[in-house]
Length: 294
Length: 310
Image (tube, rainbow over all chains, first blue to last red; front, top):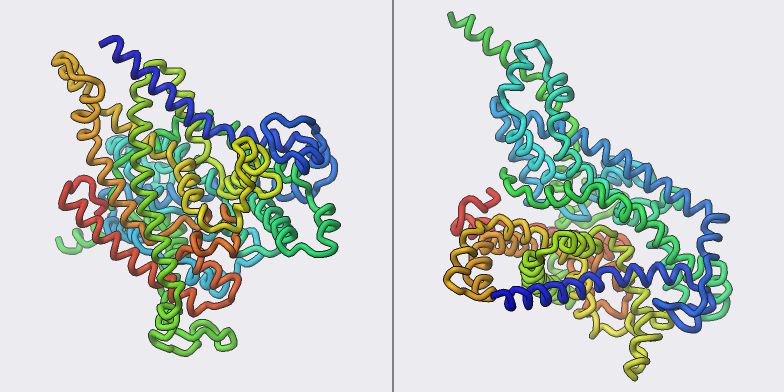
């Protein structure tokens, strides 16, 4: 029995070490590429063990690129505002729905739930956000479409309120003369920090990583988020290499170089890697909260 | 008496006014983001003419659909979307279950947590960054494959971004790589929830580990497997837009194996200005997708009412 157990331990560790390497190595390659000497990349390609190391990409990043820091600022701003607004709106919608005595609550819950089953897709949504409410090239374009409120989060939060905030507490607050708003932010929210952290983390990640809204609704470089800048740089270099011809090498030289591109990608990942350990437990909890029903 | 009851009812309704007010911002957003676009689905039946406005454009019935289904694109994007998703569902769930079972075997808690943290990393980053990581591997002139790995194996460099035949494997690999950590943790939670007494009894009877996995672990997590599978089947008409658009760098040479409904709709709207085709394809996706959700949910309900969404 012991021998069998030990075999399983070895096998499990072996498989998981291989999988972990597969998950980590591309990040290491990205990082190594960002600290490789530019000429070395051109001749030897991206390598885990570059023959010449250089931090010039980061120096360039630090010294010259206002645009990158501007984009970084946009990403931070959108993530902070978006996550906060999303938490406020989501919890405001979830709390009344968690109250079983609310007349019409069932119907409103269905209205929320239905959005999970059926959606209009890209073209009609694009039309609404450009024709009905013109968000093109505004900060709202990065905040509103698709991201701000997710019906799944509303139902998740509603279930949490129903199961963890005791009805007796709500009733005694009401007897003590607390209004509904007061009950909501003095009692319900403080008791619900775990779910707020979970939803906040998912929303924060969604805003930080979003590139779709920028791609669809933003053409003004001043409003590009970091992801949009990364997207643009990739496309432009690709454009230059496929169109070829005279002058392209000059244009290529003027663009951020290979290592510089990788350095921007690195500074895009680092905040997630730093923040994740703090949120890990909420992350796992959020993924495993099962009971979400319409 | 009646007036007292009436007054009581009015007072109690007034009690709910603050609660209704709280609903307003969220519902207003859902109307804007989710319900107004449903009316916009009618665009698929119109000949959009910006000078007349969206709502004033002429109705043309099913013409857009006729054009769409006459092209070879319709079949290609439907085939690609369905095949990729089918492969993703089978391999994705299979891999996640296998990894979750192995993770559960690991006794060393520190190692187990470390593995979990590491394999979730790809899930946390944007698909744009994934496209960078893939590019670092596959770039024709400077990629790790063409410059280091393939020469070491004595294979000629490959122009990855212009050869469609490799992309079904690349995209499947990238999808599995990005998603395995997330799904595996869902399954791990289910496995941890299994009562330890079953394994105890099996051990006393001399059952091997492999037998325990087959006869206890798998059957106990089958409800979770079925539920995730049916949810995925309900979404089989929706492709991961970022994966199919960003990772192949929107390379036209690869469309044969990378074009899916979502990328087709996007290119139609944003790059070709062909709103008719694009909205018809989008409508086709929304409606077939909705029907599939309803069907898969009713199957879940038949199996286990608890697991059904509605």
